[in-house]
Picture 1: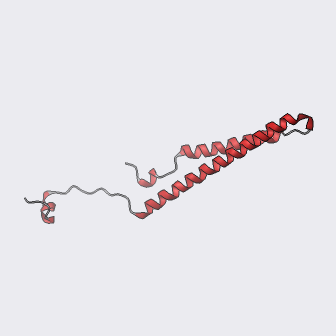
Picture 2: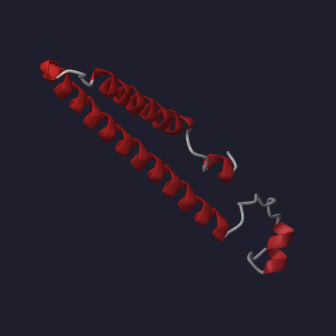
Picture 3: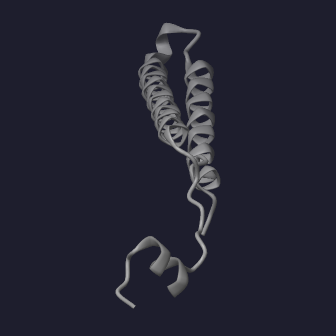
Length: 106
């Protein structure tokens, strides 16, 4: 069985997905900036650039929301673990100990 503190760590997949979303938002933002037209005759690129900028913003907001959810999860787990000590295994109780405690009729 894993130690509770080790089991409470943030999964690497969540961290990887957050970083991947930030990277994707950066790529969409860079494409939006590159496609912005320098001449009004290329207005179609302006529409594409605006769509990419909105997509970048939406992906960035999604990454931030996911990051805050993971942080909130980690804080809740830390609060739960702070309430008590970790579980300890006990030794097997023999018949003599049960007799001394008055838990058996033997």
